Length: 617
Image (tube, rainbow, N blue to C red; front, top):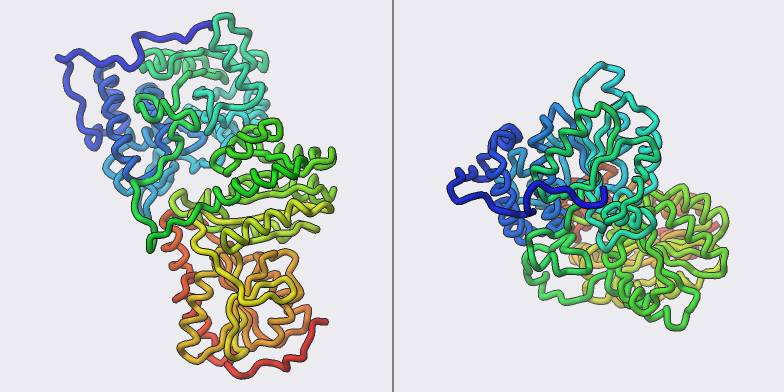
């Protein structure tokens, strides 16, 4: 269709005499939403927007995407019978309105807080949350699988997959469409939430095609050429028009795409005027940092240093997977737009395209959240590392991220990266170390490199008292009782633990390898001179940096035990980063307690260090 269909002006309010809408906490779930009159449904949309602006700006969260799906979410729950009909979200950060409509408005004061509502669909919270989808472009595969299962079992439940916020740019979405379109007997209703953005405006040819479909001389939709039915575009802010399109789609009994046009940040002027990302994520209302911490964010330090390097290193190219500003590349893009590439939500393509850029004589810097590198592991392993392509991967939000929960904790990277031959990995402890590591990484020309750092502020710089074989010594113990190997941002906790143990007469030397893969020989040399070696990282213990150090110590014939401290290999719930680390024993107090117990039980006694002339084999 050449124009967006609508039944009445978007955002119009019902007549004054219309019955009031129940409070959000008393809607009565989807059945109550279906019982509302059309005018009441419009009033409900206005109430939800007011509620979300107030609630989400207090707690922090994905405000812009949810302001854009208010009417669409209401229409979905008026047409379909959740949870009997399966409504799936991609990505799940668009599901706040869905949570409100399914009885969880009362929990929004605890959104993304420990023990509170998840910022994504959560099966623990509600039967209406089918999948906990927070990595983009996967929902159509889920829908295809469910539809196949329903066909085999004879179930009549309908499968509705809502995909938006740029998720259709991911390759996995097209793999699924290839299967869905080939099976006209398996009805999957694909609701394309087209807001023309992910964070920033959506990149690539698909964005152009969707824009053409919204125009006055629309071509045949690509979806139709694949064999799918296509309805739209429809005004996704017009409840009546969206309901009509959804009912028509359900009646078709075949795979269909319902193209809904929405506006990210709808109804909240500050979001509508924010050209950067339309309030994609807002922070909780400002609170003073711990101890007045006004240090820069890790992301801003990386972004500033890369932009500075770009002035003299004209071969540097920045690559992002639809996250230019969140990964700190906005300043580089402002200065060097021709050397900035946004591939859309396509981490696999980003990794392999970066290898191609490297083979063309450039040095790509691929900036992604650590959790999203998981999606490109095969490309990192076999397209980048196997070919010794000089690509630098910068992993933001590594370790515990906090409020976004299990899908966004960047705790898997060190375990995965240890498997990659020839890859060098740095874990800087502070802003100065990050700048230094980035300069060193982009100077490597014979293979890939990776840098990892956490979410949040860098804190003050932690100076080294000396350097041994490239390893920074942050504190020298009075005796050679414990060598404490700090990985990245865990330096502060390790120094705190050393202070606590020193008060009990235990000598602790704290070192920062800076580059944790491969294991620096100096770490092994120092370990052979201590009674106990302990490693501390904010990644999973299994296969992480600590385990690599323990293996290197074993290969060197070390008699001293090596204790690896890290995160349990589990899906950790959302909460404040410091609280989660403390629960996992990774605070200064927790580390000191663990090491104290080891020394007290006799598994490693102070004063029994091996001969300091011992060297590695």
